[in-house]
Image (cartoon, rainbow, N blue to C red):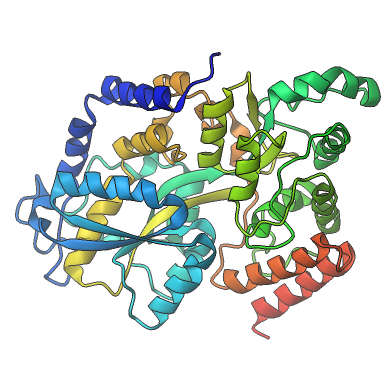
Length: 464
């Protein structure tokens, strides 16, 4: 397979959209036409005058939308397209990923939120939904705002449940359905395959799509590659990204998807929790400068050809494949042990906005997460689909990495590791980051670290 240039990718994406669904404008217009509008009357859809094109009732309305800076350019593109189609203006504000949760919660608590709609990380949903900061979308789907062709059931269940629902109520719409995956430089591993097999009696390559059967196996390969001049990519030693990496290892070692049980108690006392952290500590020895406070360092190391393996999310994976090629250059698989971390984002509405703006914001949320835009965001921006209908044969042929995310071709992505989607996540996450950072830097032992996190989590969840 010939490696694609960035320009060829853009042309291919545009050609796909033109062939698969007519022009983009036609697809978007069809989607907007069924969205609906409302507001002003105190209940969703109260001001809709034309139910065949309810968005027309909100022309001239100006919305403020909040996003993580990681997706600022993507949402600016979506906002521009939505505004062109509907006449509803959307102003996009972005927050640093590591600061977004705190800043949004501070605004909500003061009832001074400066945005009408926003994206929420899967692990933040409880923090916004439990206290009532996010708008209940039930009434909107029972109003003239609802698009009959939206097909909520087309969203894969794991995304619909975790990005938008809380205690049986629907608060958000799934936008970015991501799972962490392991990406390796297949071309680099092939050069060391014979020497590794001679030494360890096993293949150096992870199988597709299952990946390495365990972190023990991955660590053997990582040490071997390190000894041969190749570091792995790893975010660690400090920063919020730590909470993305440990859960993969925890679930692989314990067989438990979640670190909190059904009663909200910590499972970090389980057999395997310490082994999971030891894997992470060991990997720091074979990683290239694992000192980042964000996730972009390991992405850039891989893109620059300085590392052979990295665990990363969907938009980064799309960049890897664009540069090196699918299968010839890279191989994308489940994280070792087969428990990839659930990531991704949903679109939520600010419950404190006035009704007219909330109605218009619902139109935006419904449009941005529609079947048409789910495909567009993937083919144009690498945003992993949340909908089953996006995994068409045409898309998988042109973007073969979609095979990895299609649960029909890769059923392993149904078995995920889940971080605590809990209103107290910020406290739980801060504790984990602080303590694991100590272990990764050698300031505390693995046993001491896990014991401390376990005890602190118990105290947090009991309210002590």
